[in-house]
Image 1 (cartoon, rainbow, N blue to C red):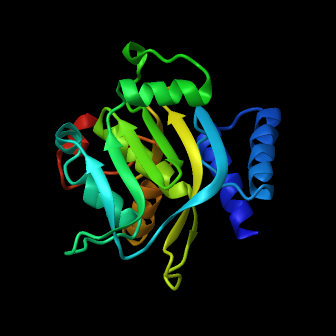
Image 2 (cartoon, one colour):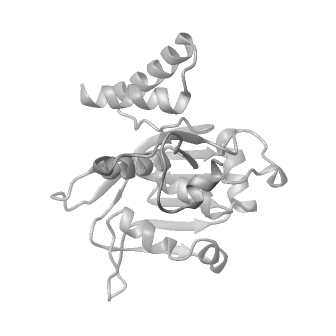
Length: 239
């Protein structure tokens, strides 16, 4: 019941208050995914294909993470972020176990793979900002993007593709084999909130983290109706 409530709330926040027919369509898609034991990705990616089987990443082991200098420049420390998200650690012996992880840009190689999987031509010149591509299959995990936000959103979707995570399980986590190619339809995806009361600041922070995971990229705080002693710039903006 709790999971159903969360899913229904997510439909409203990500799809918006659309027609009842649109709401029912989104709800049915989620129910079909749950019935087929497939992860539910929210918001729904532009292009998604699931493959047979799963990829297991062994917890506590090092992994072969391939990241080039350009990606490290765009998103410093991303290799460590990916390892932490997947429960991996560095091994002094350099032993590789589990999946091979590749962090790359959306170049010719990634585009050929995207076009082959989804049977559609996507010119690199038309690539939108914040686009990302995820490919998980045959023990390989590829994350591809051309900007920092694209990699950030890829990491959020990667976490949604985890179908099993158990700290007591020596096998670590299990990822559903899939290909995801996603990009935004709107440059600004915002949330309008009142400034929280002191006792609600913790909840507000959790809400913001949750909305970031759903690919929101703006927070608008309303401050009308009261005076703020600091910072004074807030009051000045309303004069």
